[in-house]
Image 1 (cartoon, rainbow, N blue to C red):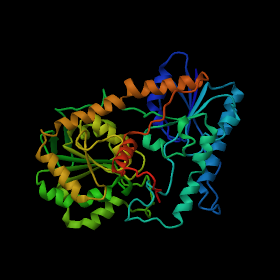
Image 2 (image 1 turned 90 degrees about the vertical axis):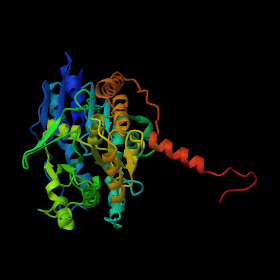
Image 3 (image 1 turned 120 degrees about the horizontal axis):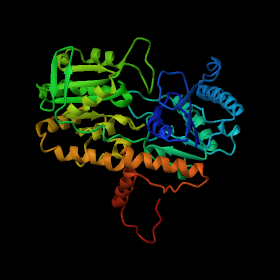
Image 4 (image 1 turned 45 degrees about the vertical axis):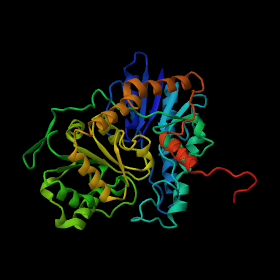
Length: 441
């Protein structure tokens, strides 16, 4: 079969699927992307670039729509050239977020298009205005509404969709939900597993840490408020006071992936260090930056307590990777986390904004490491049963591709997800018995 993939940052969420498909005899895999240095064997990688940046005079509500249109136009020109070469895919698969997929059906009208739908923006029960420290202005609400233009155009252009979690899928308008399958990219639980004999050496201070040490970990691609970095940092003075032997390993860069950008040269790490000053024992806090993947897995494997915080937003792969490593997760009780973690069953949940709860839960974990082992075991089991790459996610994804490529409608029941089902159960339990003969106001 011939496959056409699209993602700005090759290979993005498609790494495992593309690697598998490219290994199969007879398959041809073409991948369109922005310029980058990543490579995969047997994959024809084609780079594209929009002809220009959005115009400065474009209204800022629709600047992202213009950028998406420019991306879609650049992709369409590359695909027209592929078409002239005689290439015709059996299926087209691409991330919907940046517009690349919008004009594909204008080139290959009868070829099925599977879109990746990651997040539908909104003003309620999501990231916008979640954190009172960063309140939204009125201007943010119409901007976010217009931000969904590419989302909605992509839904119309695609034959089917995929979202990694039920919560993310259910953010989309109800009329579109039945044609979006819930399939996570998958976690390689053979590679990512508990390693009791692991050690991590901190080269700058010459300290080697093992599972016998008190190691508190925090991971985010960039250290920023969307992933609760500011809340975590404010919990550290009291946490380190209570745990005089603990060390904190923080993985992440100083950029901003989500939310408001900082002025050039500024970072949230510098901001928090300046705010907390000498209240922090910097001899026990280690900023590791971005590190190679094998080192990242070693940090997870040596962790005594792993703190994962997030706004109501896209769930990080790192949380599932930490669970697969057997970490004890102290996570925010926000919807993306609650879909996976049940309090005191396979992790501990806390209020995102409560530094006191962070301190109390981590302190409890470090006080009773043996008693918490069952929670660690169930955390890994959750990932093995529901998110394992080889036995769950990749087979589901390949079956979805095969169904679409052969003209069949995927069999995808609508699943509300654990967190939403639980919310409905609690609502029903609180509902007083209906009194006949009276109308509710």
